[in-house]
Image 1 (tube, helix red, strand yellow):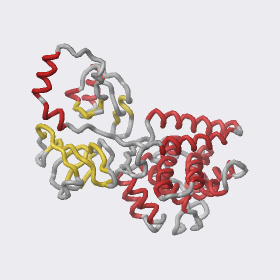
Image 2: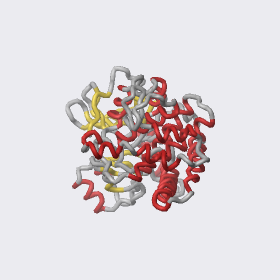
Image 3: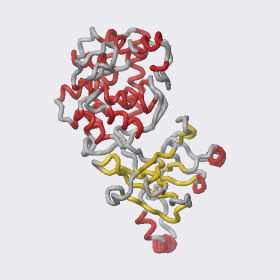
Image 4: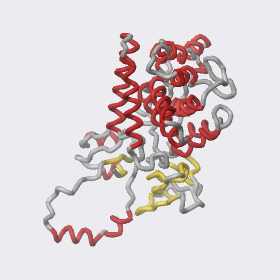
Length: 376
C-alpha cells in the first residue's frame, strides 16, 4: 500500500487502511472502492491523506511496448527511490477479525446462556500462538499497534497477541505461553457482568460506588471460570490478578503476590486500555508507552517492561510527527530493534512549506534527528 494526498485520490482506488477521524470514527473502511462523492466528503472533513492499495499490473496487457519503455526511461530514479508505507502487524487483519468474532461469540454465549462452550477459547489460543509463530523473526520485529475505540473483544485479542509475544521473547515454556495466551482472551470476562459504563471513562473520576463495582470485574471473571478444569490454576490466577501491582496499588485485593505470567498480561492490559479507552481516558500510543515505561520496576518487573518496549512501535506507521529540526513528516516504517527510531517521509519544511519531491530520513542513520512531537 502507499500513502497519497486527497488531490491524487481517484475513483476506483481501493482504500488500504481504515480512514479515521480524530475520535477514531471510521469514515471509509479498508477495502472500500473510492467514488467521487467519497473524495468530496474527505475534503469536507479536512482529511488530507489516505492509504490505497498498490495497483496490480501483472495481468494487464503489455502493449504498447514503446510507451512503457519510454515511461520507464523518463522516471527511473523516482520509481527506485520511492519507499512505500509498511505496517508491521502481529496478526493479519483477516485472521484478527475472524478470531475476534469467534472470541465474541464464545464469551457472549457463556455470559448470557451459561453454556459450557468456554473451553473453545483454548483452541483459539492455540491458533493464535500458531499464527504468531509462522512469522519469521517474530520476536525481533517492531510492531505497529493501532489506536482505536473501545471494544472489549478486540482488546482481549490485542492483549493476547502482545502478551504471547513477550512470553516468547522472554523464553518462557510452552505451558507458560499457553496459559498467558488463553487467560488473556478471557481476562476481562468479568466486564460482561458490569452494568456501569466503562468506555472512554477514567474510573478514578466515577462516583465511589461505580468505582467499587468496576474494580470487582476480576472477581466476577474468576468466579465464572474457577470450576473450569481445562484451565490451569496459573491461568485462573491471571484472570483474578491482572490488575494487581507489585507496589500493592492494584485491585481487587491489593496484593503483591503476583506471578510473572500475570505481570506480562497486566503490562499489555494497561497499555491497551489506555489506547482504546477501557476504564481510562484514551491516549495516543506514544503516551501509553511512556506510562508503561514510568512504572517499570514499580508496578511490573523491569525486564518484562523492557521486552514490551522492544516490541511495540512508539510511533506507528502513518503517524504525523514533528522533528527537532522543525520539519513535519509521516512515519513510513519501523526499524528492527529500534521502536523509537523509524523511517520518516518529510512532507513539510521547518517553515511549513510543502517539500517538493521525496525526502526520506532513517532515524537510525541520521542520529541528529529525533521526533519531538506527534501531531494529532
